[in-house]
Amino acid sequence: MSKSITTFVALGFVALVSACGGGQQEEIVFVEPDPVIAEPIFNGKIK
Image (cartoon, rainbow, N blue to C red):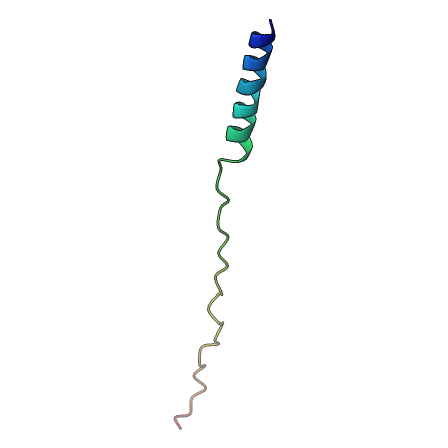
């Protein structure tokens, strides 16, 4: 009986470690947006 309890505890520990410790966190990348530039407006005069 003690051997089966030890086996269940060991399997539970292995499942816990594999569920929590094995994953890698996703890297978050922030991208700067392009600056907004107003288009030149034609007002009838050429400089």
